[in-house]
Length: 66
Image (cartoon, rainbow, N blue to C red):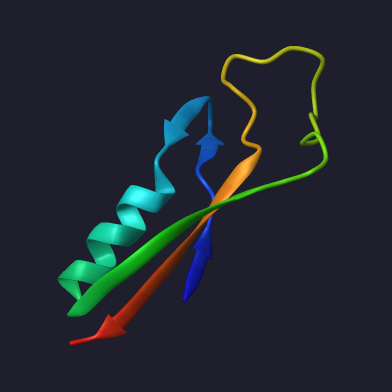
């Protein structure tokens, strides 16, 4: 199992869950399931403005080696 969250890096959206999916498949893993985990609390903000939606969820990949 692997848990990850998409992120904003230098103002650019990074789709980490897709990058990790591709890496798992490239390295011989069979994807079994993906769960979306949602926070109960509001995510923290470092600044008073925002350019992207807040990330209030993460992903849990379930995979096994082929």
